[in-house]
Length: 493
Image 1 (cartoon, rainbow, N blue to C red):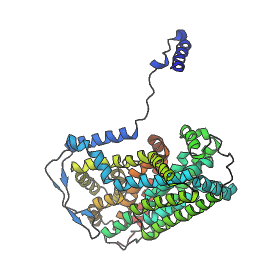
Image 2 (image 1 turned 120 degrees about the vertical axis):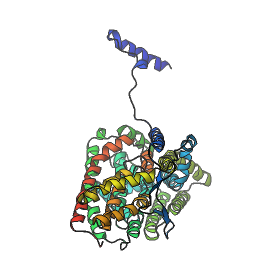
Image 3 (image 1 turned 180 degrees about the horizontal axis):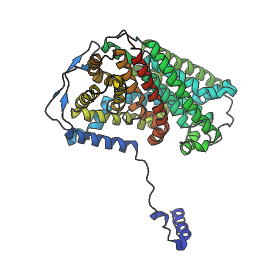
Image 4 (image 1 turned 90 degrees about the horizontal axis):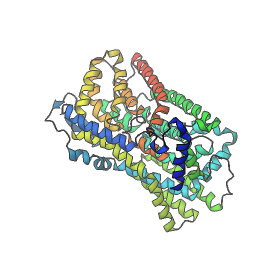
């Protein structure tokens, strides 16, 4: 209290006869609302819209895989069901319930990586990797982005970024970059790998099934587009990373990274301090962790493991590594508890983000929005309909951030429209796939995206400012290749 009093007195003295206000009376600087506040405001806005937008719905049928999809041409107005106070109050708990798989994936996988961090194997692995690369550490960002994008382009799980981030962050900090570089490396590669995926089952595979196209046809065209998108994305991230390394104070996350270095690396701005010689236990544990991690990723690629399997395998990996390192049972439990605490906000955010979709469903206005968007697309000139689909899906992603959910909701309506105007179904799949994916890391209703930002303590607005120029460039690439696809009548139909 004494220090505070002295500070106020100094402020008054400095003000002198100029009329300066004491610090306690200075106007408070505006600060960005917490993401919880942003999402709460969105929930309230959507709730009000359920009173303004007509209520309607499409008929639905169940596919062989158990998923429901809409029936084109079946839209009809129904009795209004605007949400009540209790619907709004319970939206967040119900959102957490509906997003429980991703919530627990974030909590368990992130918590397991936190346990590994406490064993010392992650820092050890980072040091070994840096020594092996020598003067070629500048290749780290491109290598990681290519690997992450390739994995997601085949299996379609951008949520894996939740597992990558706690490993990539200390690596980037040790290399002299910042946490924004780490987040960009993970989010952009995983998301664009999914968005421009080659055999991703949740958008490409499901879309081809609904369109009755040969499964994964047109892969060569998608490989070409993904390659160009990743070249541009890697160049964008590397340019930023080099700027930060040359002058760390240019980092948009500079203040936060000072604390992160103390937490993750045990040091301040000096990221080159010597590390103690690793013990034999640490070397064995590090090798075992590497083998298990590669095995998990390989199994995911080969057997299409789900979120339950991933969560369980990461926990098992953390426990085995802890045992090898010599931690006793109680210490392992304490490490898990501490790690879970650090992941709790990131996990909860995914459920709160889902609450927006819950309110839309309660008010039965989602189908009305889809119907009106399809009517708008039908009025566009045939030559730019595919671009209209791309941009519409990109914006609609705010309401339905799920790739498979958006495909099942919009594609059955868009396919008959495409047949009517002479647009091939393959082009419609591309437009919906690209439009859905590219804004997954723009809108705060995307659960895994917000979880990763919270985990890295990167401000949402700072991310949007960083990401938006790249998003504009990638959308321009997508538009150009859609026009090319129309020019060559990309098919088979």
